[in-house]
Amino acid sequence: MGYVAGNPVTDSQFDEDGKIPCLHGMGLISNELYECTKDINMLHVLEPLCEEVWSPRIHNTSATDGMSRLMLESARAADDDIIEFNFPWIALDLRKSNLAYLLQKASYVVLKIWANDKTVRESLGVHKGTVGKWTRCNYDIDYIKDVYSTVEYHLTLMRKGYRALIYSGDHDCGIPFTSTQAWIRFLNLSVVDDWRPWYVAGQVAGFTRSHANNNLIYATVKGAGHTAPEYKPKECLEMFARWISGNTF
Image (cartoon, rainbow, N blue to C red; front, side, top):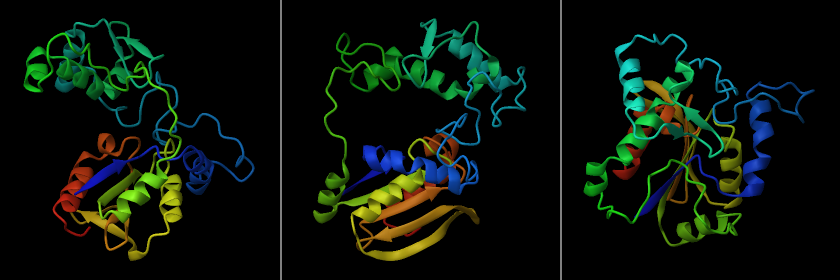
């Protein structure tokens, strides 16, 4: 038995303290600007902060491309005029949207259409009338946040023998790898397989380290942002497949 945590929010202190060292270590800010960051997209440091700017990942995508048209038509076929994306205060009117931004977030659009499809909801056992429309990153759930650190929970699970795979996109500065490695070090677990690269199809896919008789495996995913599978699906699937089958990286 075990669990997986990717780009995980874990501890408010660790999570925040690792951001500036991450940006500085990647050479994105100078020594003079070490104490002050501006215009950095924390969710993927190589992409623009402004959502209306062309993304490097889709800069060469043609507006007449078949997949582009499919995504646009699917989005406009949704029963919602407004599709909410990463945060509740960002709403995008699809009929007036910048095509580049729409394509960048096309997977979110398709996901919302799929999750709210009547047939899909029936297949998932969602009883009619019990759940409203599905929303990605739903911040309207009425609960009180009173757990600011889950580090001790990880340690408890380790002591009980649960296996864990913890991974980070190495271009994610929202929850940077520096923060995740810091709280893992705080657990004071023995290292059984030290820092080394792991490969997919003969290419370096990231770096990994194993702790406590391989009960906790930490891995970075090269070139991935927040969250890693969105940017590197092939590598993340291979990583999970190796872990769930008990194979080494």
